[in-house]
Length: 585
Ligand code: DGT
Ligand code: CA
Ligand code: CA
Ligand code: ZN
Image 1 (spheres, rainbow, N blue to C red):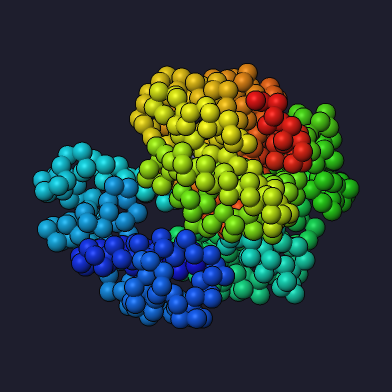
Image 2 (image 1 turned 30 degrees about the vertical axis):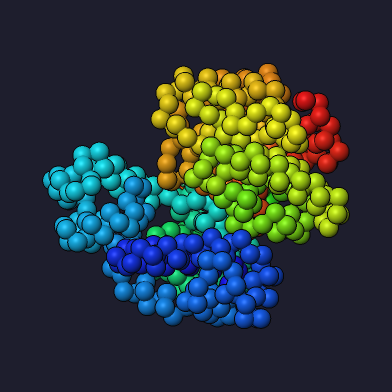
């Protein structure tokens, strides 16, 4: 296990112990231990364990040293497994409800014998929760709203999590001997930010072995449908997946159909009809009323296609990438052959919104830069939180200056080929002022400005607040426009069009925050904004080395927003970026 995975386990142990009502000092020891562990570099951790010196680290007592060593060596911990098994699953599940921490859950359990979310809903409905000491009407309302949200959100899944399961399934299907072609379809292939269910399409010579393989996948809890040409399963996580199997001649038509979207399909069928053709998942045949069955069969042969490109060509269209198939005008542009060349993952040369252990990140500066270098990035930007974000351990002026010096020294040392840009993720204060003064900001290479508090402001106030920050001469880019967390919380209210106008007028970049939970600013705004001259930065908002990979989710959304390389600042070389930053001073 990596140190961050071990730290996750320690933090979870802390939570579970608190849920059980253990001694607060013990609970805190695990929380502190998790943080102490994050501050050690990966290689150093291995060395300390090997030398038996882990106990010399402040915050790591004997019990923790033993547990960390066990996790490091074996990837699991007996103590943890037993602890998990000793807790009613309903209690742990309640932790997912916003506003319910271990203490409150324990109170609900002890005083009202509540051990499931269903029982909690009932107790809220008849007012028993509000009557409890330390709860009240407001808390009860918040809990109920949280439960409702959870139900509504629970039906969909983040693309990233869906792809972690779906990607290997496609790869697995492709190596089955009966399978000629296999692809993901549906919203998974269209790279939507959230996914209802997974769709897979296969061209195979034989159906039964493919279905048998699919329904036996690890994690399958239930087979919800099984037929001659398809199967559907539900995984333990609640995620569902549809598999359809077709003969090879039908594959392209079915792939197009099951990729969708519905709106795109409806428009494509209309277009086909206007050309005397009927389009479906089965094929492209003369529309009803024209020709005999034999003629239709002949015609069907004439519209055999090998690829989706062929299929689009048959309808006089340029190939439309799946990301653009949302029925938002892509067909008209494809007819004119003017679809843009969409930005690709390999076009990226770096990113700017990243955290380190100096604020709330989980890897040190050197580890983060090392990971960026391993990805072949030409540059890497450090933007830790500013002082008002105390909940995220935001940097004081003094600590920011220390970090700045460390970054400059690391650049001089040439330890990494990757150049480090020194920045900050500076809080936009409630009135739109920035969290650091001009003199300090002027020493940095760039400034990301973000909203992290006073989310409840009305739309007019919030919009004016963000625009004021955009107009600040030191501001380089705006972080996560709405602060939304997909499937968890709505963003704050803000007039996106006005903010976009202000950003264009002030030559400020807007970030496409690539964290799979954010993907903010939303792809639906990007096409128009970029046409009007807005520049995009695809930023992973990484809090650990593994988080850098999230730029891939950002590229998905950028593509859905019709962005090309030219629209995205991170496709530029270091020199070009330096010129861009300098031009803004
Ligand atoms: P999701 O699963 O909610 O994230 O969204 P999709 O787009 O994956 O939808 P899904 O799984 O229901 O169906 C996959 C594709 O199959 C969909 O994008 C288009 C096609 N499809 C399914 N049902 C219909 C339909 O009733 N009419 C049309 N035109 N296409 C359909
Ligand atoms: Ca689907
Ligand atoms: Ca489906
Ligand atoms: Zn932020």
